[in-house]
Image 1 (tube, rainbow, N blue to C red):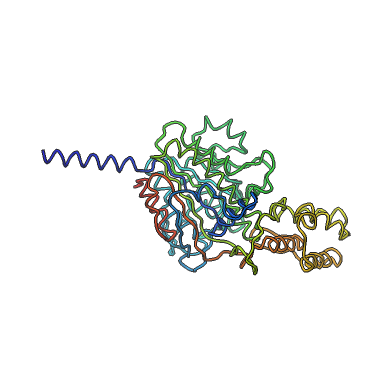
Image 2 (image 1 turned 45 degrees about the horizontal axis):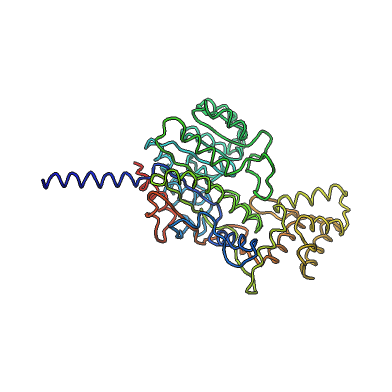
Length: 466
């Protein structure tokens, strides 16, 4: 009788353990999304409703919320490749490494563990498929700039679904030599390539493995910013939905899906607050897609949301005890498109645009003067830049990691940050904490402050990967 009780207890405990295992794993990474990017977005949403406080994003309502440290093996300030590798493999490495340790040995990723455990695997992003963060989950290269070599690693990993803007160097090696296009190589490995959502819907049913990128002719480096989106543009929520449908078709043994909101980082590099907050909202919309799936499979699904590092040193408040985030609603497009509009005006007027014409453009695109009164100092900043770049024709573009910006657009962005009372300490990464949120099977493992290397280890434990 006593032995029988032990057997029953073992069976019961085994059953409980199995029931709590995550069959479906969603791993969301907001590139550059520090604590203030999240908090600022929630206050931005609250101010839109005419109140002070926060309007929670969905992922901040998850029952588990904490912070993680992000330093790399070589510096307190990490880059995306070292941070991506930490989030993918649970190991620190040098800035620049993709899926390799300090000695350039290959590290196994949590996605590879999921695949070996019989799960289907998806790696998706709003930037290029061969960019640092997604690459860290499937590739193993000594340098993140080896885009062609990273792309060649994609079919070697054998994952089931990839998605993003496109590929940065589809036929050029790291040493700038012409090479066979990666697209036929990937197709010969059994992948179906869909360019755009309509093509994906046509091809998905018969495809064994899939790569979803933007339509032919689109810029391959990334999807458009949410603030700039036009009808028919591929979106991160659509990618997430497509990934779920593809990874659950046929023999459904569960899946692991990484989704990166890559352009939060790009907007932070550009110190463009309105664009940053809209990108965080867009990531949350992708999380909402996963959450709808979670509601159907609450005992088998784990959702983890985090970031690789903070970008920009975003400060919420400058000088006065005030924020005016609602003013950012008057910005109609990203700094990148404002820069293009100014360049177009310069060409249209053969470099002779008047101050009134420039003012009209800024009023239309940023709400200056019409909805947003400017101080004398702010107008002087814009007028001085106009005199330098339009009248004297001394045009010095501001350069950040992912953009070259018209000097007048750069000045307009600074004025907008001043009006909103948002500060920036950097146009690069910082060493600030990043948030970690979790819900579902195994989410209790994510309680307490941790290092970023702990996150994939705890995911693997929650999902029972070998």
